[in-house]
Image 1: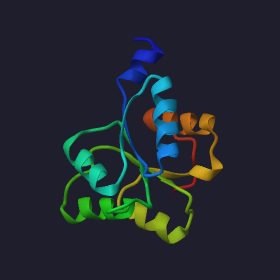
Image 2 (image 1 turned 120 degrees about the vertical axis):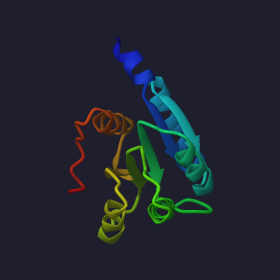
Image 3 (image 1 turned 90 degrees about the vertical axis):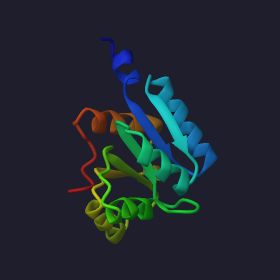
Image 4 (image 1 turned 180 degrees about the vertical axis):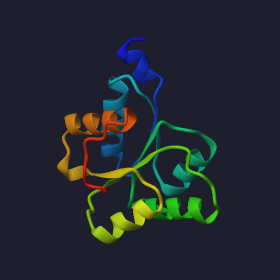
Length: 138
């Protein structure tokens, strides 16, 4: 199987309310060959996360309707198992937020303003292949 076919078999959900950033991530990942879906708010994200398995979910924290942490909290309260690895997309790097996210089972986080498109692809590839290169979460 070629690298492109392997990536095409990987499904990613991008949850981001800012249209420009969402479109950038979706196009960037699709260009690499990933199957990408998106959600524009917390309610849409929760519904998609509840009904479908993804190889990776990139979840913004600050979202309309339900924020990213509330989505994770809702899964935990309902004792629903998150079958997909979650990585937070944020411009926040507060320790309290990160600690709460870890408690909800996130794999890591990416500070959007610190990453180039190349960095995003490298991070996504690392999470999908178990070779995570971001050491911000321990």
